Length: 600
Image 1 (spheres, helix red, strand yellow):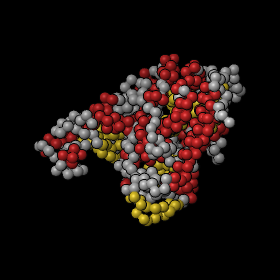
Image 2 (cartoon, rainbow, N blue to C red; image 1 turned 180 degrees about the vertical axis):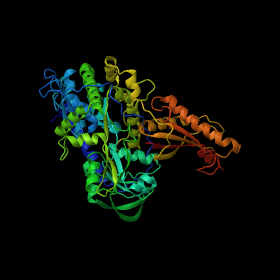
Image 3 (tube, helix red, strand yellow; image 1 turned 30 degrees about the vertical axis):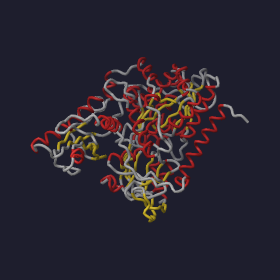
Image 4 (cartoon, rainbow, N blue to C red; image 1 turned 135 degrees about the vertical axis):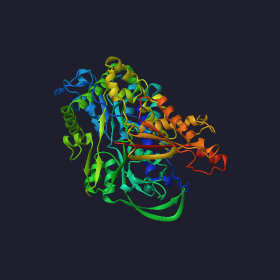
């Protein structure tokens, strides 16, 4: 039987799913005799500044009706996770289907929202939609027009998806067009308190989580920020690295810790098996709300090591659609984005709107034991006492208004595209660790389309005062009180000077992206020199080099590196990390150490 185009695409998706599933299940059993993977230091990931803004004005909230709204318009189907960052979408819609008097109906959008937590099914929905579109139906009835995912997983998600869609033609690419909100604390790495006090204590840890998912990314960034290693082989145990057990979802990750899940694995060092075995028990979790609540209430004993509170630009709730349909229906896309932004604005301004959004969340998510008060409480974020009596931070999300979205995509003069930075750095990370699964990924510029946001901004531009309130502000008088990461960066300087070598520019770009992601932190730049020349000049030189890095960052993105965020410290030649007896050693000592932390 000859397959039609839709059938071929579906078979391809099934095949890709089988291959990915087989890799997860059997690992190197698919290739007997393959060399065990060596633990690696995750590539450094730098995040930007994306604080939660105030509302654009003092908005009165008027609850929409319950009847159908915009029913005369074509249905726009939208799939997303159970995630508080989407509250602006849900409030704007008034329920599962756009209701009478809702913001979506006001903008002429007949949106139907449904929950879907499985990324594979989200991909399938977009492929089914694009396939029917390619067959000549301008308003497909299959699949979904839009989906939301965690933006830090965008590169891997779109690589697999667009590799399939390109068979339909170049116009059927899936693209990111908006960010509805952010995780601001609810996604996290949880572990023993000693990991937070001394990150090196995490060596040999055994963490449960969805591998290659957004929460896993948080741990990878934290490891990279502290010069620690991860073991990408889920079948071995490396005592010098953080080790992983793959969970089916974020709730399963929490339950594995609660149940004391254990495995016996062969021990490896530097990618080679030692001949020993070791039984290991999960003592860390990467998860998100309500997974963190499960850990705290049912067992306790873990704290938030790092989360999207510190890495506050890491996890935008990005909106993805099919390019060809969006270009043909620009007014609908613009209206949807405008409604989402207005929904976020109303939630920021009015507690009644947040309560209504929480009620809609409870109604649509159907999460056991999670009523409206649950979603409202953990949207704001709280510190509670866990089962052992220890305090633990739980929850935390934010919704975007138009000013937030413009800053997220670098559409405010002097700002950087935070979504692109997140997309690129975590794309590099997964490509480094799993090249067999993600050997490459689409460039950010090819899959991020800011034209729709620009349309909306032209129609309802935020005032200068609102933009100013949205920009990050840091207290330059207050010292860092909690270190999140400490790592040397290979930013090379010309000998005896505070000027960068040509090779330094690539490393500076990586540093810029990494710090853009970690937007909830202040930055300390520590300058160091070798021992050549006059000792009396080495400290001033190290200070000049640290200032060179600071000034470069501020020049690249003044909005994201405002006054007070970057501080400078000079050490001269007092802290070498290599012998000064060789040219190679001296080059290593002419370095910059970056410390990120909080001072709240």
